[in-house]
Length: 293
Ligand SMILES: NC(=O)c1ccc[n+]([C@@H]2O[C@H](COP(=O)([O-])OP(=O)(O)OC[C@H]3O[C@@H](n4cnc5c(N)ncnc54)[C@H](O)[C@@H]3O)[C@@H](O)[C@H]2O)c1
Image (tube, rainbow, N blue to C red):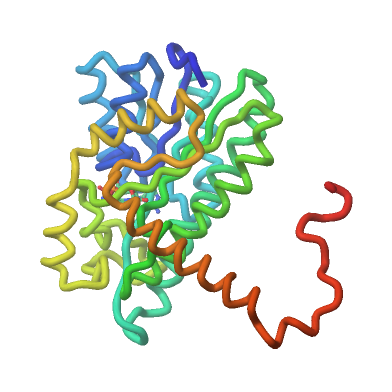
């Protein structure tokens, strides 16, 4: 997307942290912004504050773990601003811990919010963007934990790797419709993600502490609170959406960690190429479907 002025961005988890940073960046670029958040009171308060920065913003209730709630929020966005062009599937929560310590309900919570919430946002808005024909962009928030997998963060990394994978597929599906796709993979950003238990719905056990990042709560909080400013992340997302970049990184120093992961994967392929067991394979199925060859 090259032109932002007068268009609309719908941002889940828009009332806090990275979502709010994106709202500011898109708002200052002349877009209307919809802050879609489970904390609708905060979303509405924050929308009023953005108005003082000359940004046209509304706050709406949206629980991304429920498809119907995302659809309702979309209707409110359309009734406020007519059309939506940019969708930021950003709402997310954090759970981690050693094997056997993460409760079933926490697994359900993080999968429903971080993974299915992204699916619901995309499925709700793609037909709407398609119908107005002006093009658009889907920017979903994964994490550096969608590229590398630190021990003890498996519930979180499982959902964030999924967001990266879905975005890679959607980019191919949506390019012909003039809908760009990006996946945001930040390192630590100074937000309230370490307190995500505050947004846990009753169906997942209600509000309270969760061992957010697989470390002691204080250690996790310290890492988050030493992160970069979410407004900078918002500006980075704006420039990447303008350039239609698939991968949005904010912490260049993590490149070595991603390279180390890829080196391990490549070494696995090298072992396969020399494998005695595989020498007996006479014919391989095609790498891409025959129809596309
Ligand atoms: N802060 C970091 O270091 C960091 C790093 C990488 C990725 N992320 C990702 O960034 C995204 C935003 O998180 P943040 O760091 O700004 O945290 P945050 O806690 O400050 O903001 C998250 C927002 O999402 C909302 N939310 C929670 N559950 C929701 C639900 N079911 N439906 C709708 N809204 C809901 C919260 O009310 C809150 O306003 C998340 O996807 C997170 O995983 C954060």
